[in-house]
Image (cartoon, rainbow, N blue to C red; front, side, top):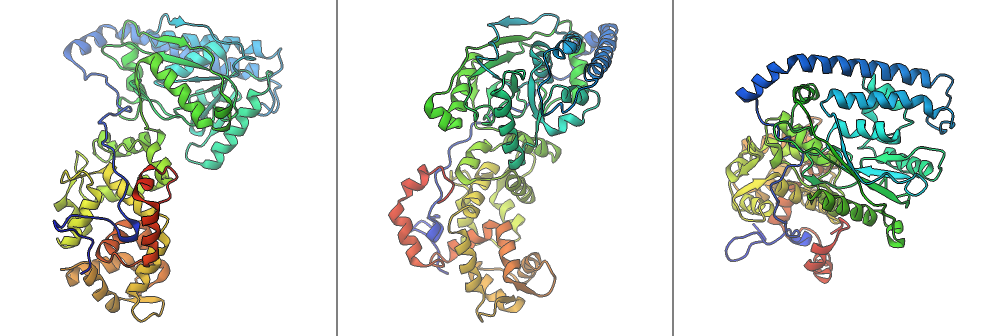
Length: 520
């Protein structure tokens, strides 16, 4: 067997693919975890004692929502083309009762007074407002204070009663995982921001809620138009009940109950100075977004991280699967920048990681790795594990696993690797792989592969159950399981023509490490 191996038997690289960039150590921090303490005896007693107050607050909440819905319907009588044209000046005062219903909702949640610092800027000076996003309370306050045009997730429009009120705010709805929807929303933001007949445009650029202990990655929709923005930072000083509405935390009804059985919940809002983009930032909205993000983080005295909405979705899925969500977070923005990784890719990689028996802690040992792949212990398997375990900890994390799979599957030579592997396996050059003809090739690549293990592997590849693999079937299997491409390249480092390796050597590995384009 030809392997990429030095004198100590350690992994060196993947032939023409080379070695992947260094993996930065992951800071164990989860911005999507609610810190509310468990029910203590004192907390249960307090909840029982405040039950009458809670009942009054529930009635106030129901009354406020009902009146808000009724006032919204009355204010919209005769309104046409609501989502395309701004309201005339005479119609806007009709929404004032709805705004005060919003303030009543805050009162029902135990927020009796709000400490406000700074002043909101006039619309003609800063047409766009951006804020950190911690709880549903953020949106209610901004609705009450500004009645802005908001950018909201499309699914929020389906909420009972609240969805109807949100629609009346002439919202820009966006599907967060659909690039076309995001581009359309960006165009709508610019169209409305440039016309003072609209209200302020309000955006939560994190596109998800956090626990308020960090500012996660910003989407660039608020910054692409190149207009001045006014940041707002919201804080919730608390001891017992964390008001953050995040994936790993109480359900919304439980959170409401906990808030309503507090004597008082604290809320602080600070309007920061207007931030105007430089010429370079108008050309590159990501730079503008980053400057605003750092400014807001400094005002809150919290860190900035590369987590994103995709991480929040992964954390929610991990919690459902019984895996520690903190162990699954990728800081997805880094992977998106380096490899153009999609949320669909990340979810697929998570399902593969789960199949390796990662357990509650989200850790895969070498034994789990071999057992999960259904392959025999061998030198090439140990080298494959070392390819993923770049820090040599003997334990594989989801971050390391995803980094390795993304490096292979998004590599610029990946299509050539597929073609080279198929050509190597297709000894008779007929465009198909017969079960019996493929077996010796696979045993050459994976030593000690038993007949039973080979049959199971072939059955996974043979989606049509025809006993023969087409080129498309073989490619499809390798695309879904990039670790097998890595196996071939470890075992057969000269599989891809030598000129590819010469080109890689010319580029230099340092250039690979510094590249942000996702093409290696």
